[in-house]
Image (tube, rainbow, N blue to C red; front, side, top):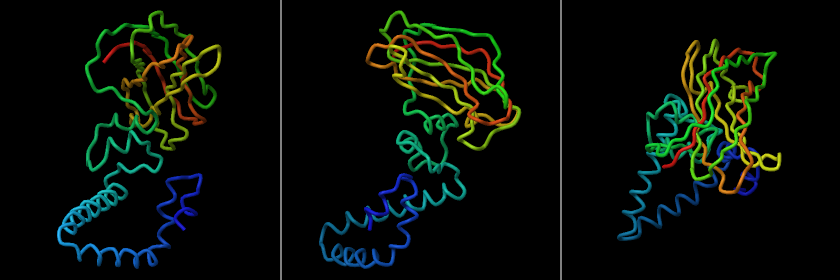
Amino acid sequence: NFYVVTAWDVWQYGGRAMIQSYPVLAFGMAAFITFIFQQKVGKYVWILLCILFCYYNLWWTHQAHRGGLLNTDMTKAYFWKILLRYQVPLDAQKLLDTDKEFLGTQKNVEPLFISDSTYKLDAQHQLCFLPKITIAHRNHKWLRVYATCQLHQKEWDQWKMTQLVILFEKDKQEMKRRCIRIQRLLCDGEKKEVWIDVKLPKDNFDDLQIELWNAGNNKPIEINHIRAEVYDE
């Protein structure tokens, strides 16, 4: 039954489909608890684990109804960032889209690209490509791209949020792609600088492309002062 429930292309749906199995699973749980309490030492370990799991369950329940940290499309990086916390920086929302963040002090920073142009995306203008960037020296480990963004009205559908995309290419073929959804980080009428950190590919690549994609939404957004830099940990 567990295999059938989890053999589903939408992985986060599986937990809800287990609810119908609870009455049957309760018999196994009762037998297990009876066995544990017959042990002299081991039962205390299991009691502590039981308390921890109950707290974990209550924490998730709180996040689902009031805390706001639950997102059914979370990534592994986002899960470990918020685990058992009640408040996290807004920038943690980036980890719903990308798997890396840099929290240390940047070293050996080398500017790559600066654009003072203003890019306006709306229903008629959905996609912008910035000039391709070539990195002459591959001695750095990280790339950071900044963009100053201003919203007029927030898009709440995450699949339609404007994306700041970083694309690495080799032989004109996509090699690595990372992005963040800008509206996760801004509110209505807010103007703010956002950035994305990406680890440079270990394999050689020809150049990188910065893209701005409105992802099908018709709400206008202005993006300017885009700059890119490479750095080390």
